[in-house]
Image (cartoon, rainbow, N blue to C red; front, side, top):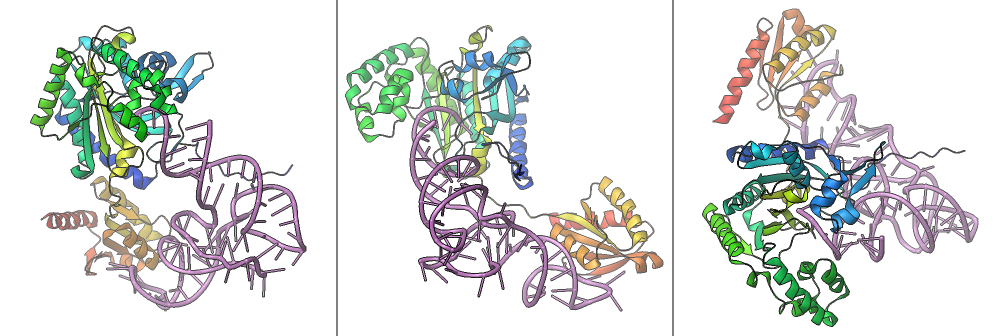
Length: 430
RNA sequence: GUGGGCGUAGCUCAGUUGGUUAGAGCGUCGGGUUGUGGCCCCGGAGGCCGAGGGUUCAAGUCCCUCCGCUCACCCCA
């Protein structure tokens, strides 16, 4: 048998996050954490794996996600488990399991991490993707809705021009008023069935609100006459929506109303929103969310209201302009000969423990090669110490910008280096 | 799940109507300076041309199949 050399690759739709991208993600995460801290939102981390039931009941049995996109399998005991396709259901499960709703009137939680959906990958869509999620659990106040939108907008706008963003708001109504609209809409769609495309005829049965997303011009023409949720919404829902929008204005967040905005998951009611960005390809939504007051009871919990949102990290990455930050280190130690190289290790450890960024060649290379390495590392200073210097009990400190060199005594060398670097840094800050 | 586009060096890509040993730029390593970086000059390493089959005297180039990537549809962050 001839053996084939097959290089291993990552699973389709699963991506390695290489150091450069990892840095950009860290920046996003750090920014988000700061904003959460200022809003009193605390982190919760739930497992990546849940019993399938959690999602099947939470998201809705007949949604696309549950029907055909979940990574579901049996473990060794035959239990059905699912890699989480979204965060809300798991977080709510945790809140119910630990009865966190008894610990405070309102829980303000965030989490960030990977989600999994078995879809065909394309721009801005992966099988393992990452979200930053926020859930406000226990409040039906419209201010809660507005705060959640605020958080999404505030985080995203740190990374792109606000001109590139469009916030769309809508209300889906509640179990009181939504059925009335649905009934009329179904009737309308049935009567105009012949003028709708195949997709829309199918949507009419599965998820009628989705027909409004259709790009077909013929359908759009028909749909202009279709009943709109807005006109069916009950006074309570209408009042709620009004207050959400008022709060957004008070927060200084620009938005437009989109009466056709629909969410894909079953559990949404009343407020729903999407934050869209330019240049994302077909998937323009960078963040989205809404209110899900009924979800808790679907998971056998008490009737607790909630509102939340998710930011798609990969989509946010697409919005960010790609500029890698130049590398920089405070000091590069170029040591020649075994005596100097050993001595350098003491300085290396000492200086790093002082918080300086110090690099050192792992290989015993020529001075020229080490200088090159120093340059590539973006070294501010380079300490040069070879046999000659060791004999004289001194070392050369080179300023990599000015090329100025000075000779330093080996006594107290580390302390002097710390001084030099720090004074240089404070000068640079001014 | 359905369609379109693309697979040549680590990266971005050339490669004529099929025709000798498959190229460039960048990156990487080394030399030019027996101990001093960037710019410049010189050189090295690095390719079963995605895989398999077919046509042909001859295939990176033409045909078929598969695989992978990618964009879009569906749907969604």
